[in-house]
Length: 596
Image (cartoon, rainbow, N blue to C red):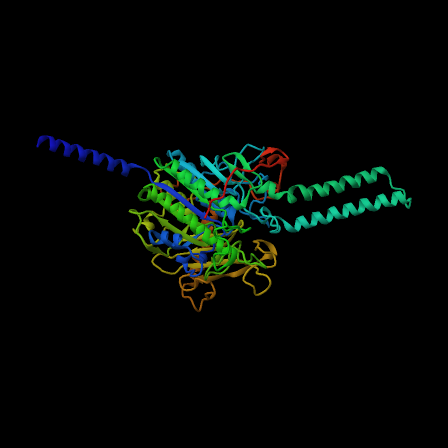
Protein backbone atom coordinates (compact mmCIF):
# COMPACT_ATOMS: atom_id res chain seq x y z
CA UNK A 1 0.00 0.00 0.00
CA UNK A 2 2.84 2.39 0.94
CA UNK A 3 4.61 1.62 -2.37
CA UNK A 4 1.42 2.39 -4.32
CA UNK A 5 1.00 5.73 -2.54
CA UNK A 6 4.61 6.65 -3.28
CA UNK A 7 4.17 5.72 -6.94
CA UNK A 8 0.97 7.78 -7.14
CA UNK A 9 2.66 10.81 -5.57
CA UNK A 10 5.61 10.45 -7.95
CA UNK A 11 3.24 10.25 -10.96
CA UNK A 12 1.36 13.34 -9.82
CA UNK A 13 4.58 15.25 -9.30
CA UNK A 14 5.87 14.24 -12.72
CA UNK A 15 2.59 15.18 -14.36
CA UNK A 16 2.68 18.52 -12.57
CA UNK A 17 6.18 19.19 -13.89
CA UNK A 18 5.15 18.32 -17.44
CA UNK A 19 2.09 20.57 -17.21
CA UNK A 20 4.14 23.41 -15.82
CA UNK A 21 6.71 22.93 -18.57
CA UNK A 22 4.01 23.08 -21.25
CA UNK A 23 2.48 26.17 -19.70
CA UNK A 24 5.85 27.89 -19.36
CA UNK A 25 6.85 27.33 -22.96
CA UNK A 26 6.45 30.37 -25.16
CA UNK A 27 3.94 30.06 -28.00
CA UNK A 28 4.94 29.48 -31.61
CA UNK A 29 3.79 31.75 -34.43
CA UNK A 30 3.00 30.82 -38.04
CA UNK A 31 2.14 33.93 -40.05
CA UNK A 32 0.90 33.45 -43.62
CA UNK A 33 0.53 36.37 -46.02
CA UNK A 34 -0.71 36.27 -49.61
CA UNK A 35 0.38 38.92 -52.12
CA UNK A 36 -2.37 41.08 -53.70
CA UNK A 37 -5.25 38.86 -52.52
CA UNK A 38 -8.67 40.53 -52.51
CA UNK A 39 -10.86 40.11 -49.45
CA UNK A 40 -13.66 38.93 -51.73
CA UNK A 41 -11.59 36.01 -53.05
CA UNK A 42 -12.11 33.88 -49.91
CA UNK A 43 -15.12 31.71 -49.14
CA UNK A 44 -15.47 32.76 -45.51
CA UNK A 45 -15.52 36.40 -46.64
CA UNK A 46 -18.35 35.86 -49.08
CA UNK A 47 -16.96 34.20 -52.22
CA UNK A 48 -19.07 31.21 -53.27
CA UNK A 49 -17.31 30.28 -56.53
CA UNK A 50 -13.61 29.97 -55.64
CA UNK A 51 -12.94 26.94 -53.41
CA UNK A 52 -11.00 27.80 -50.22
CA UNK A 53 -11.96 25.07 -47.71
CA UNK A 54 -8.67 25.18 -45.80
CA UNK A 55 -8.74 28.94 -45.24
CA UNK A 56 -12.43 28.66 -44.32
CA UNK A 57 -11.50 25.96 -41.80
CA UNK A 58 -8.97 28.29 -40.16
CA UNK A 59 -11.75 30.85 -39.69
CA UNK A 60 -14.19 28.23 -38.37
CA UNK A 61 -11.62 27.04 -35.81
CA UNK A 62 -10.49 30.52 -34.84
CA UNK A 63 -11.30 34.22 -34.99
CA UNK A 64 -12.20 36.16 -38.15
CA UNK A 65 -11.66 39.91 -38.33
CA UNK A 66 -13.89 41.68 -40.84
CA UNK A 67 -12.35 45.16 -40.58
CA UNK A 68 -8.66 44.22 -40.75
CA UNK A 69 -6.75 47.08 -42.37
CA UNK A 70 -3.42 47.27 -44.20
CA UNK A 71 -1.37 50.38 -43.45
CA UNK A 72 -0.87 51.02 -47.18
CA UNK A 73 -2.42 49.77 -50.45
CA UNK A 74 0.91 48.65 -51.97
CA UNK A 75 3.50 45.97 -51.19
CA UNK A 76 6.61 47.76 -49.91
CA UNK A 77 4.99 50.30 -47.53
CA UNK A 78 2.38 47.81 -46.29
CA UNK A 79 5.03 45.20 -45.47
CA UNK A 80 7.29 47.76 -43.80
CA UNK A 81 4.40 48.73 -41.50
CA UNK A 82 3.54 45.08 -40.86
CA UNK A 83 7.08 44.19 -39.77
CA UNK A 84 7.67 47.29 -37.63
CA UNK A 85 4.22 48.06 -36.23
CA UNK A 86 4.64 51.60 -37.55
CA UNK A 87 3.34 53.58 -40.50
CA UNK A 88 5.74 53.23 -43.44
CA UNK A 89 6.32 56.99 -43.47
CA UNK A 90 8.27 56.60 -40.22
CA UNK A 91 10.72 54.30 -42.06
CA UNK A 92 11.15 56.57 -45.07
CA UNK A 93 9.01 54.29 -47.23
CA UNK A 94 6.29 56.77 -48.13
CA UNK A 95 6.52 57.88 -51.74
CA UNK A 96 6.20 61.51 -52.88
CA UNK A 97 6.12 60.73 -56.61
CA UNK A 98 5.28 58.02 -59.11
CA UNK A 99 7.60 55.35 -57.66
CA UNK A 100 5.66 53.87 -54.74
CA UNK A 101 7.53 50.58 -54.25
CA UNK A 102 11.08 49.31 -54.68
CA UNK A 103 11.69 48.63 -58.39
CA UNK A 104 15.20 47.16 -58.54
CA UNK A 105 16.88 44.59 -56.34
CA UNK A 106 20.11 46.42 -57.16
CA UNK A 107 18.85 49.71 -55.66
CA UNK A 108 19.96 51.03 -52.29
CA UNK A 109 16.52 51.71 -50.76
CA UNK A 110 14.85 49.45 -48.23
CA UNK A 111 13.84 49.01 -44.61
CA UNK A 112 16.48 50.99 -42.68
CA UNK A 113 18.77 49.01 -40.36
CA UNK A 114 17.71 51.37 -37.56
CA UNK A 115 14.17 49.96 -37.64
CA UNK A 116 13.22 47.09 -35.33
CA UNK A 117 10.98 44.29 -36.59
CA UNK A 118 8.89 41.89 -34.54
CA UNK A 119 11.25 39.13 -35.73
CA UNK A 120 14.18 40.96 -34.15
CA UNK A 121 12.33 41.34 -30.88
CA UNK A 122 11.39 37.65 -30.78
CA UNK A 123 14.91 36.64 -31.75
CA UNK A 124 16.14 38.51 -28.68
CA UNK A 125 13.73 36.38 -26.61
CA UNK A 126 15.31 33.14 -27.81
CA UNK A 127 12.98 32.43 -30.73
CA UNK A 128 14.19 30.73 -33.89
CA UNK A 129 12.87 32.98 -36.63
CA UNK A 130 12.34 32.22 -40.30
CA UNK A 131 11.02 33.94 -43.39
CA UNK A 132 10.05 31.85 -46.41
CA UNK A 133 8.90 33.71 -49.52
CA UNK A 134 8.70 37.37 -50.49
CA UNK A 135 10.62 40.20 -48.76
CA UNK A 136 10.55 43.30 -51.05
CA UNK A 137 12.20 45.57 -48.46
CA UNK A 138 15.67 45.86 -49.98
CA UNK A 139 18.99 44.01 -49.70
CA UNK A 140 22.11 46.20 -49.94
CA UNK A 141 22.98 49.80 -49.07
CA UNK A 142 26.47 50.68 -50.31
CA UNK A 143 28.16 47.50 -51.53
CA UNK A 144 27.09 44.12 -52.88
CA UNK A 145 27.07 41.88 -49.85
CA UNK A 146 26.59 44.45 -47.06
CA UNK A 147 23.02 43.09 -46.67
CA UNK A 148 21.94 46.10 -44.62
CA UNK A 149 18.25 45.63 -45.56
CA UNK A 150 18.33 41.81 -45.78
CA UNK A 151 15.92 39.67 -43.70
CA UNK A 152 18.88 38.18 -41.77
CA UNK A 153 19.76 41.71 -40.64
CA UNK A 154 16.17 42.38 -39.58
CA UNK A 155 15.78 39.48 -37.19
CA UNK A 156 15.11 36.45 -39.38
CA UNK A 157 17.74 33.85 -38.57
CA UNK A 158 16.70 31.86 -41.66
CA UNK A 159 15.57 33.16 -45.03
CA UNK A 160 14.62 31.33 -48.20
CA UNK A 161 12.77 32.96 -51.03
CA UNK A 162 12.38 36.12 -53.09
CA UNK A 163 14.40 39.05 -51.75
CA UNK A 164 12.41 41.11 -54.23
CA UNK A 165 8.93 40.33 -55.60
CA UNK A 166 7.23 38.99 -58.69
CA UNK A 167 6.95 41.29 -61.70
CA UNK A 168 5.68 40.47 -65.19
CA UNK A 169 9.33 40.64 -66.27
CA UNK A 170 9.89 37.40 -64.32
CA UNK A 171 7.97 35.41 -66.93
CA UNK A 172 8.73 35.76 -70.66
CA UNK A 173 5.78 36.95 -72.70
CA UNK A 174 3.97 38.66 -69.81
CA UNK A 175 5.00 42.22 -70.73
CA UNK A 176 6.78 44.94 -68.77
CA UNK A 177 6.04 46.34 -65.34
CA UNK A 178 9.03 48.50 -64.42
CA UNK A 179 8.96 52.07 -65.75
CA UNK A 180 7.58 50.94 -69.10
CA UNK A 181 7.31 54.50 -70.43
CA UNK A 182 10.94 55.24 -69.52
CA UNK A 183 12.01 52.01 -71.23
CA UNK A 184 10.17 53.10 -74.37
CA UNK A 185 11.81 56.55 -74.28
CA UNK A 186 15.28 55.07 -73.88
CA UNK A 187 14.62 52.66 -76.75
CA UNK A 188 13.57 55.52 -79.00
CA UNK A 189 16.70 57.49 -78.04
CA UNK A 190 18.77 54.40 -78.87
CA UNK A 191 17.13 54.17 -82.31
CA UNK A 192 17.64 57.91 -82.92
CA UNK A 193 21.30 57.59 -81.95
CA UNK A 194 21.77 54.63 -84.28
CA UNK A 195 19.98 56.48 -87.10
CA UNK A 196 22.15 59.58 -86.53
CA UNK A 197 25.31 57.48 -86.56
CA UNK A 198 24.26 55.67 -89.76
CA UNK A 199 23.43 59.00 -91.42
CA UNK A 200 26.78 60.54 -90.50
CA UNK A 201 28.69 57.51 -91.82
CA UNK A 202 26.73 57.56 -95.10
CA UNK A 203 27.32 61.30 -95.52
CA UNK A 204 31.05 60.86 -94.92
CA UNK A 205 31.38 57.82 -97.22
CA UNK A 206 29.45 59.50 -100.03
CA UNK A 207 31.46 62.69 -99.64
CA UNK A 208 28.34 64.86 -99.27
CA UNK A 209 29.76 66.67 -96.23
CA UNK A 210 32.96 66.66 -94.26
CA UNK A 211 32.34 64.78 -91.05
CA UNK A 212 35.30 64.40 -88.76
CA UNK A 213 36.13 61.04 -87.21
CA UNK A 214 35.88 62.61 -83.75
CA UNK A 215 32.21 63.48 -84.37
CA UNK A 216 31.46 59.95 -85.49
CA UNK A 217 33.28 58.55 -82.44
CA UNK A 218 31.33 60.90 -80.15
CA UNK A 219 27.98 59.92 -81.68
CA UNK A 220 28.98 56.25 -81.49
CA UNK A 221 29.76 56.61 -77.80
CA UNK A 222 26.46 58.39 -77.14
CA UNK A 223 24.57 55.70 -79.05
CA UNK A 224 26.29 52.93 -77.11
CA UNK A 225 25.59 54.75 -73.85
CA UNK A 226 21.89 55.11 -74.69
CA UNK A 227 21.74 51.43 -75.68
CA UNK A 228 23.47 50.36 -72.46
CA UNK A 229 21.18 52.47 -70.25
CA UNK A 230 18.18 50.84 -71.95
CA UNK A 231 19.41 47.29 -72.36
CA UNK A 232 21.44 46.45 -69.25
CA UNK A 233 19.06 47.47 -66.43
CA UNK A 234 15.75 46.86 -68.21
CA UNK A 235 16.14 44.07 -70.75
CA UNK A 236 17.97 41.90 -68.21
CA UNK A 237 15.43 42.51 -65.44
CA UNK A 238 14.54 38.83 -65.19
CA UNK A 239 18.16 38.14 -64.27
CA UNK A 240 18.53 41.09 -61.91
CA UNK A 241 15.21 41.03 -60.02
CA UNK A 242 13.81 37.51 -60.27
CA UNK A 243 16.07 35.49 -58.00
CA UNK A 244 15.96 33.08 -55.07
CA UNK A 245 18.22 33.42 -52.03
CA UNK A 246 18.92 31.09 -49.14
CA UNK A 247 20.04 33.39 -46.36
CA UNK A 248 22.62 35.62 -48.09
CA UNK A 249 23.48 33.29 -50.96
CA UNK A 250 21.84 33.50 -54.37
CA UNK A 251 20.78 29.94 -55.23
CA UNK A 252 18.80 30.56 -58.41
CA UNK A 253 19.06 33.35 -60.98
CA UNK A 254 16.66 33.79 -62.69
CA UNK A 255 14.12 31.75 -60.76
CA UNK A 256 11.96 28.98 -62.15
CA UNK A 257 8.31 29.77 -61.40
CA UNK A 258 7.16 26.26 -62.32
CA UNK A 259 8.72 24.83 -59.14
CA UNK A 260 8.45 27.87 -56.87
CA UNK A 261 5.27 26.87 -55.02
CA UNK A 262 6.63 23.44 -54.15
CA UNK A 263 9.90 24.87 -52.91
CA UNK A 264 8.31 27.54 -50.72
CA UNK A 265 5.89 25.06 -49.19
CA UNK A 266 8.65 22.49 -48.59
CA UNK A 267 10.92 25.07 -46.97
CA UNK A 268 8.12 26.30 -44.69
CA UNK A 269 7.17 22.79 -43.59
CA UNK A 270 10.82 21.90 -43.07
CA UNK A 271 11.37 24.93 -40.88
CA UNK A 272 8.51 23.92 -38.58
CA UNK A 273 9.69 20.31 -38.42
CA UNK A 274 13.27 21.34 -37.56
CA UNK A 275 12.14 23.66 -34.79
CA UNK A 276 9.18 21.77 -33.33
CA UNK A 277 10.90 21.39 -29.95
CA UNK A 278 11.70 25.09 -29.43
CA UNK A 279 9.81 28.40 -29.69
CA UNK A 280 9.72 29.57 -33.30
CA UNK A 281 8.33 32.28 -35.53
CA UNK A 282 7.69 31.46 -39.20
CA UNK A 283 6.54 34.07 -41.69
CA UNK A 284 5.37 32.37 -44.90
CA UNK A 285 5.10 35.21 -47.40
CA UNK A 286 3.63 33.69 -50.54
CA UNK A 287 4.52 34.79 -54.06
CA UNK A 288 0.90 34.13 -55.10
CA UNK A 289 -1.29 35.87 -56.30
CA UNK A 290 0.85 38.70 -57.64
CA UNK A 291 1.29 38.78 -61.39
CA UNK A 292 2.62 37.09 -63.42
CA UNK A 293 0.13 34.44 -62.41
CA UNK A 294 1.48 30.91 -62.27
CA UNK A 295 0.17 27.64 -60.90
CA UNK A 296 1.36 24.10 -60.49
CA UNK A 297 0.06 21.49 -62.98
CA UNK A 298 -2.31 20.02 -60.41
CA UNK A 299 -4.27 23.28 -60.24
CA UNK A 300 -4.13 24.57 -63.82
CA UNK A 301 -7.61 24.90 -65.30
CA UNK A 302 -9.36 23.55 -62.20
CA UNK A 303 -11.16 26.68 -60.93
CA UNK A 304 -14.19 28.53 -62.30
CA UNK A 305 -12.22 31.77 -62.50
CA UNK A 306 -9.45 31.01 -64.94
CA UNK A 307 -5.79 31.36 -64.06
CA UNK A 308 -6.47 33.74 -61.16
CA UNK A 309 -8.89 31.28 -59.56
CA UNK A 310 -6.35 28.49 -60.06
CA UNK A 311 -3.83 30.58 -58.13
CA UNK A 312 -6.18 31.23 -55.21
CA UNK A 313 -7.10 27.56 -54.95
CA UNK A 314 -3.42 26.63 -54.94
CA UNK A 315 -2.89 29.13 -52.12
CA UNK A 316 -5.67 27.41 -50.20
CA UNK A 317 -3.98 24.05 -50.71
CA UNK A 318 -0.71 25.42 -49.34
CA UNK A 319 -2.47 26.89 -46.30
CA UNK A 320 -4.05 23.50 -45.70
CA UNK A 321 -0.67 21.77 -45.81
CA UNK A 322 0.72 24.27 -43.31
CA UNK A 323 -2.17 23.66 -40.94
CA UNK A 324 -1.74 19.90 -41.35
CA UNK A 325 1.96 20.18 -40.49
CA UNK A 326 1.27 22.10 -37.28
CA UNK A 327 -1.42 19.61 -36.26
CA UNK A 328 0.61 16.53 -37.19
CA UNK A 329 3.49 17.63 -34.98
CA UNK A 330 1.18 18.19 -32.00
CA UNK A 331 1.85 21.93 -31.96
CA UNK A 332 -1.68 23.27 -32.54
CA UNK A 333 -2.49 24.18 -28.92
CA UNK A 334 0.74 26.15 -28.56
CA UNK A 335 0.80 27.80 -31.99
CA UNK A 336 -0.92 30.96 -33.16
CA UNK A 337 -1.62 30.75 -36.89
CA UNK A 338 -2.46 33.93 -38.83
CA UNK A 339 -3.68 34.44 -42.38
CA UNK A 340 -3.89 37.72 -44.29
CA UNK A 341 -3.01 39.65 -47.47
CA UNK A 342 -0.62 42.59 -47.74
CA UNK A 343 -3.35 44.74 -49.37
CA UNK A 344 -6.35 44.50 -51.68
CA UNK A 345 -6.60 43.04 -55.16
CA UNK A 346 -5.34 44.76 -58.32
CA UNK A 347 -8.61 45.32 -60.15
CA UNK A 348 -7.11 47.02 -63.24
CA UNK A 349 -4.91 44.03 -64.08
CA UNK A 350 -6.44 42.04 -66.95
CA UNK A 351 -5.64 40.89 -70.47
CA UNK A 352 -7.23 38.82 -73.22
CA UNK A 353 -7.12 35.77 -70.93
CA UNK A 354 -9.32 37.48 -68.35
CA UNK A 355 -9.00 39.13 -64.95
CA UNK A 356 -5.53 38.77 -63.39
CA UNK A 357 -6.19 40.73 -60.20
CA UNK A 358 -8.32 39.97 -57.18
CA UNK A 359 -11.88 40.79 -56.21
CA UNK A 360 -12.42 43.15 -53.28
CA UNK A 361 -16.02 42.24 -52.64
CA UNK A 362 -18.40 45.09 -51.91
CA UNK A 363 -15.57 47.51 -51.16
CA UNK A 364 -14.66 50.39 -53.43
CA UNK A 365 -11.24 50.58 -55.07
CA UNK A 366 -8.26 48.28 -54.84
CA UNK A 367 -4.49 48.09 -54.87
CA UNK A 368 -2.68 51.46 -55.05
CA UNK A 369 -5.90 53.47 -54.55
CA UNK A 370 -5.02 55.25 -51.32
CA UNK A 371 -7.63 55.03 -48.59
CA UNK A 372 -10.49 53.48 -50.55
CA UNK A 373 -11.59 50.44 -48.59
CA UNK A 374 -11.01 47.89 -51.36
CA UNK A 375 -7.27 48.51 -51.34
CA UNK A 376 -6.73 48.25 -47.58
CA UNK A 377 -9.40 45.96 -46.09
CA UNK A 378 -7.91 42.46 -46.08
CA UNK A 379 -8.62 39.03 -44.58
CA UNK A 380 -7.57 38.60 -40.97
CA UNK A 381 -7.85 35.11 -39.46
CA UNK A 382 -6.28 33.85 -36.21
CA UNK A 383 -6.34 30.24 -35.07
CA UNK A 384 -5.07 29.02 -31.69
CA UNK A 385 -7.02 26.05 -30.31
CA UNK A 386 -7.55 26.20 -26.57
CA UNK A 387 -6.63 29.88 -26.41
CA UNK A 388 -8.89 31.63 -28.93
CA UNK A 389 -12.64 30.96 -29.22
CA UNK A 390 -13.64 29.07 -32.36
CA UNK A 391 -15.95 30.65 -34.90
CA UNK A 392 -15.92 34.18 -33.45
CA UNK A 393 -16.22 37.20 -35.73
CA UNK A 394 -15.21 40.75 -34.80
CA UNK A 395 -15.98 43.86 -36.84
CA UNK A 396 -13.89 46.31 -34.82
CA UNK A 397 -11.12 48.16 -36.72
CA UNK A 398 -7.80 46.32 -36.47
CA UNK A 399 -4.52 46.68 -38.36
CA UNK A 400 -1.70 44.58 -39.79
CA UNK A 401 0.49 46.79 -37.59
CA UNK A 402 -1.14 45.16 -34.55
CA UNK A 403 0.89 42.00 -35.14
CA UNK A 404 4.06 43.61 -33.77
CA UNK A 405 2.73 44.44 -30.27
CA UNK A 406 0.63 41.27 -30.16
CA UNK A 407 3.58 38.95 -30.87
CA UNK A 408 6.04 40.80 -28.65
CA UNK A 409 3.55 40.85 -25.77
CA UNK A 410 2.94 37.08 -26.06
CA UNK A 411 6.70 36.45 -26.26
CA UNK A 412 7.29 38.60 -23.16
CA UNK A 413 9.64 40.86 -25.09
CA UNK A 414 11.10 43.96 -23.48
CA UNK A 415 9.70 47.42 -24.14
CA UNK A 416 10.28 49.16 -27.45
CA UNK A 417 12.30 52.36 -27.65
CA UNK A 418 10.05 53.88 -30.31
CA UNK A 419 6.46 54.81 -31.02
CA UNK A 420 4.21 52.01 -32.26
CA UNK A 421 1.06 52.56 -34.26
CA UNK A 422 -0.38 49.11 -33.56
CA UNK A 423 -2.01 47.64 -30.43
CA UNK A 424 -2.05 44.25 -28.73
CA UNK A 425 -4.90 42.26 -30.29
CA UNK A 426 -5.26 39.59 -27.61
CA UNK A 427 -8.04 41.32 -25.63
CA UNK A 428 -10.15 41.30 -28.83
CA UNK A 429 -9.09 37.85 -30.04
CA UNK A 430 -9.80 36.24 -26.66
CA UNK A 431 -13.20 37.92 -26.47
CA UNK A 432 -12.38 40.05 -23.44
CA UNK A 433 -13.55 43.15 -25.32
CA UNK A 434 -15.54 43.86 -28.48
CA UNK A 435 -13.50 46.96 -29.39
CA UNK A 436 -9.88 47.37 -30.35
CA UNK A 437 -7.87 50.30 -29.03
CA UNK A 438 -7.89 51.95 -32.46
CA UNK A 439 -10.09 55.00 -32.09
CA UNK A 440 -8.35 56.58 -35.11
CA UNK A 441 -6.52 55.09 -38.08
CA UNK A 442 -4.60 57.07 -40.68
CA UNK A 443 -4.64 55.95 -44.30
CA UNK A 444 -1.73 57.00 -46.49
CA UNK A 445 -1.37 57.21 -50.24
CA UNK A 446 2.41 57.29 -50.55
CA UNK A 447 3.70 59.95 -48.15
CA UNK A 448 0.41 61.85 -48.24
CA UNK A 449 -2.30 61.47 -45.60
CA UNK A 450 -5.27 60.43 -47.70
CA UNK A 451 -7.99 59.55 -45.19
CA UNK A 452 -8.75 59.06 -41.50
CA UNK A 453 -10.97 56.45 -39.87
CA UNK A 454 -12.72 57.32 -36.59
CA UNK A 455 -14.49 54.79 -34.36
CA UNK A 456 -16.16 56.97 -31.68
CA UNK A 457 -16.32 55.49 -28.17
CA UNK A 458 -19.70 53.96 -27.42
CA UNK A 459 -20.80 54.01 -31.05
CA UNK A 460 -21.17 51.39 -33.77
CA UNK A 461 -20.40 53.99 -36.45
CA UNK A 462 -16.99 54.01 -38.12
CA UNK A 463 -16.50 57.28 -39.97
CA UNK A 464 -14.06 57.62 -42.88
CA UNK A 465 -12.92 61.10 -43.92
CA UNK A 466 -11.23 61.40 -47.35
CA UNK A 467 -9.08 64.50 -47.88
CA UNK A 468 -8.35 63.60 -51.51
CA UNK A 469 -9.12 60.74 -53.87
CA UNK A 470 -7.28 59.34 -56.91
CA UNK A 471 -8.64 60.33 -60.32
CA UNK A 472 -10.04 57.23 -61.99
CA UNK A 473 -9.54 56.84 -65.72
CA UNK A 474 -11.23 56.75 -68.11
CA UNK A 475 -13.90 58.98 -66.52
CA UNK A 476 -16.61 56.92 -64.88
CA UNK A 477 -14.37 53.87 -64.38
CA UNK A 478 -13.80 52.23 -61.00
CA UNK A 479 -10.01 52.36 -61.21
CA UNK A 480 -7.02 53.86 -63.00
CA UNK A 481 -7.26 51.72 -66.12
CA UNK A 482 -5.38 54.15 -68.37
CA UNK A 483 -2.23 54.01 -66.20
CA UNK A 484 -2.91 50.52 -64.73
CA UNK A 485 -2.13 51.88 -61.25
CA UNK A 486 -3.27 55.01 -59.40
CA UNK A 487 -0.86 57.71 -58.24
CA UNK A 488 -1.01 59.94 -55.18
CA UNK A 489 0.31 63.29 -56.32
CA UNK A 490 -0.28 66.31 -58.54
CA UNK A 491 -2.90 66.05 -61.26
CA UNK A 492 -3.49 62.38 -60.45
CA UNK A 493 -5.67 63.26 -57.42
CA UNK A 494 -8.59 65.53 -56.52
CA UNK A 495 -8.53 67.34 -53.17
CA UNK A 496 -11.82 67.81 -51.34
CA UNK A 497 -12.83 70.82 -49.26
CA UNK A 498 -14.70 69.98 -47.18
CA UNK A 499 -13.52 66.35 -47.08
CA UNK A 500 -15.79 63.50 -48.20
CA UNK A 501 -17.27 61.64 -45.20
CA UNK A 502 -18.74 58.12 -45.05
CA UNK A 503 -20.10 55.96 -42.24
CA UNK A 504 -18.65 52.51 -42.93
CA UNK A 505 -21.07 50.89 -40.47
CA UNK A 506 -24.07 51.70 -42.68
CA UNK A 507 -22.23 52.25 -45.97
CA UNK A 508 -19.23 49.91 -46.22
CA UNK A 509 -19.11 50.42 -50.02
CA UNK A 510 -18.44 54.15 -49.54
CA UNK A 511 -21.17 55.09 -52.00
CA UNK A 512 -23.28 57.58 -49.98
CA UNK A 513 -21.31 60.60 -48.69
CA UNK A 514 -22.65 62.15 -45.50
CA UNK A 515 -23.76 65.78 -45.36
CA UNK A 516 -24.65 68.14 -42.49
CA UNK A 517 -28.30 67.46 -43.29
CA UNK A 518 -28.05 63.64 -43.26
CA UNK A 519 -25.60 63.18 -40.38
CA UNK A 520 -26.13 64.99 -37.04
CA UNK A 521 -22.47 64.32 -36.10
CA UNK A 522 -21.05 65.60 -39.39
CA UNK A 523 -19.30 68.67 -37.96
CA UNK A 524 -18.10 66.69 -34.95
CA UNK A 525 -16.55 64.10 -37.27
CA UNK A 526 -14.59 66.80 -39.11
CA UNK A 527 -13.47 68.44 -35.87
CA UNK A 528 -12.41 65.20 -34.17
CA UNK A 529 -10.48 63.91 -37.19
CA UNK A 530 -8.78 67.29 -37.70
CA UNK A 531 -7.63 67.22 -34.06
CA UNK A 532 -6.43 63.62 -34.45
CA UNK A 533 -4.49 64.50 -37.61
CA UNK A 534 -2.76 67.37 -35.81
CA UNK A 535 -1.72 65.07 -32.96
CA UNK A 536 -0.60 62.36 -35.35
CA UNK A 537 1.52 64.73 -37.43
CA UNK A 538 3.22 65.94 -34.26
CA UNK A 539 4.56 62.41 -33.75
CA UNK A 540 6.27 62.62 -37.13
CA UNK A 541 8.30 65.71 -36.16
CA UNK A 542 9.03 65.54 -32.44
CA UNK A 543 8.52 63.52 -29.28
CA UNK A 544 4.82 63.09 -28.72
CA UNK A 545 3.25 59.77 -27.71
CA UNK A 546 0.02 59.48 -29.66
CA UNK A 547 -1.24 56.72 -27.41
CA UNK A 548 -0.07 54.96 -24.31
CA UNK A 549 0.60 51.26 -24.27
CA UNK A 550 3.11 49.02 -22.45
CA UNK A 551 5.32 48.75 -25.54
CA UNK A 552 5.90 52.49 -25.99
CA UNK A 553 8.48 54.49 -24.04
CA UNK A 554 8.71 58.26 -24.61
CA UNK A 555 9.14 57.94 -28.39
CA UNK A 556 11.39 60.41 -30.14
CA UNK A 557 10.78 60.92 -33.82
CA UNK A 558 13.99 61.12 -35.83
CA UNK A 559 14.51 62.24 -39.42
CA UNK A 560 14.65 59.36 -41.87
CA UNK A 561 15.93 59.29 -45.43
CA UNK A 562 13.41 58.84 -48.22
CA UNK A 563 14.00 55.23 -49.28
CA UNK A 564 11.89 55.63 -52.44
CA UNK A 565 13.73 58.55 -54.04
CA UNK A 566 15.12 58.12 -57.56
CA UNK A 567 18.60 58.06 -56.04
CA UNK A 568 17.63 55.10 -53.87
CA UNK A 569 15.54 53.00 -56.23
CA UNK A 570 17.51 53.06 -59.50
CA UNK A 571 19.69 50.07 -60.40
CA UNK A 572 23.36 50.08 -59.44
CA UNK A 573 25.61 47.29 -60.75
CA UNK A 574 27.74 47.25 -57.59
CA UNK A 575 24.68 46.50 -55.44
CA UNK A 576 23.24 43.70 -57.58
CA UNK A 577 23.11 40.26 -55.88
CA UNK A 578 24.72 37.76 -58.21
CA UNK A 579 25.19 34.02 -58.49
CA UNK A 580 28.59 33.70 -60.13
CA UNK A 581 30.85 36.48 -61.35
CA UNK A 582 29.08 39.74 -62.14
CA UNK A 583 27.76 40.46 -64.75
CA UNK A 584 27.66 36.79 -65.79
CA UNK A 585 25.07 35.90 -63.15
CA UNK A 586 23.19 32.65 -63.41
CA UNK A 587 22.51 29.41 -61.55
CA UNK A 588 19.74 26.87 -61.09
CA UNK A 589 18.68 25.22 -57.84
CA UNK A 590 18.39 21.46 -58.11
CA UNK A 591 14.70 20.77 -57.46
CA UNK A 592 11.92 18.45 -58.54
CA UNK A 593 8.36 19.72 -58.55
CA UNK A 594 6.06 17.42 -56.60
CA UNK A 595 3.25 19.78 -55.63
CA UNK A 596 -0.12 18.19 -56.36
